[in-house]
Length: 130
Image (cartoon, rainbow, N blue to C red; front, top):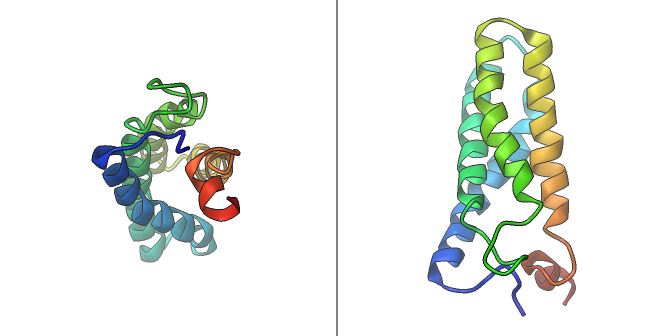
């Protein structure tokens, strides 16, 4: 059974999240290579947009705890707070703080949260292992 819920609305949200999530992983992994240049800034804005879309859309995905949010949504809340704080840090040229926020979102918001989607019984587990 799909523990994340059924219905066209949830399926649409999942489909809309796939592309921004993929963009976030690809850019997040490559953006650190060339700092202080045009690519880093443009990729950063694209990454911030993708992370905001993914985190914002995840608010509407429920089902692990019935129709309520699960512990994974803590990462959603943190991402929605950390994205603007990271942008503010970059604009203030606080590189250390900017790096902390961005690396935290990359590992926590993409790698850890992505790994948690493979919990047995969830959709990604069923897609790959069922």
